[in-house]
Length: 237
Image 1: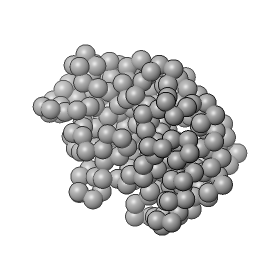
Image 2: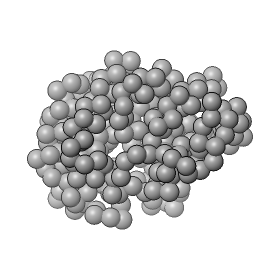
Image 3: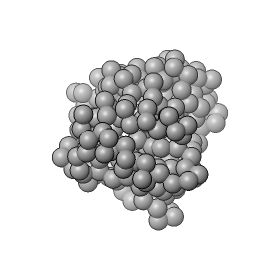
């Protein structure tokens, strides 16, 4: 088995419910989607980065793993593109008693379920219609996969949180419909967080819009938070 890695580095987690934690990031190459706000476009091509054997990748992770690392984050691109390799590498990390974290748009429930047994913390990222994630023809199909991934993660009792990136293009009606869909299949007690993440540097949403979006989620989950990307403000990768 081979794996294509774009980069491995230690930094401060800048997103989600575990922002601020010392993290080893394993960025896998390849993503088939085209979100307009993507900040890692260089890792999207399937032939980006470098190819390694699984054993070489394990050694590379081990050599970059620093003391007091809180978790190992499998990110991308989208790590589900290389789900079989992620499962093996995550299992390798778990043997070290370090939590594993999956950062994915969860576009394929079968790939997700293959990886899930070896992941401790799951970020389920829902894309809005305006994200330019995919065309409108395929949007509902992919969101249905994300919903199924959310169900699987909760059923497996993983630490699970939801993230939605929003911009000045985000429509309140579309956002509200998506939130209602989410809470039709999970309850507030099933998830560990709900993060609204504003875009940075492009189509940034105004405060008034962020408050309106917050108000949509709050009746379903009172601990909803608006959390920008911390690492952008401290100059971390």
